[in-house]
Amino acid sequence: MADWNTEMRAVVQRVTRARCVVGGEVTGETGPGLLVLLGVAPQDTLDTARTLAAKLAKLRIFSDEAGKMNRSVVDIGGGVLSISQFTLFADTSRGNRPSFIGAAPPEQGRELYAEFNTALRALGLPVGEGVFGAHMEIELVNDGPVTVTLDI
Image (cartoon, rainbow, N blue to C red):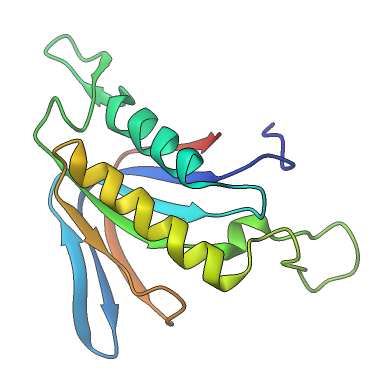
């Protein structure tokens, strides 16, 4: 079980395709690659965002010729659809309505989400984005399915 008192958190899904729609318009998409739901915590820094981006780029969750998960999104020439997701820090330990006090304030979340995406691009990955703070519709075709969480 994940330690929910960590810093930046990502839920990563291997996809054959994914896209984000806001107000009927596509804001970001990817073909084969990764859908990343990113949560930012108050203690996160620019370095945290860069570290998570580097880990994600090297994460070996794509199959090689032998069928083993031995290749990264960089290795397959894939892309990333990155979506901000403060609800990853929901606290449901009391009552029936989640508390999001464990998530970073919006200004900090916006800055670190942008830095995470910039760091992925610096590593050579094409990155589609959602719209920070917007109501988004995320469409995806999960491949596997393979879903992992990354906590930094």
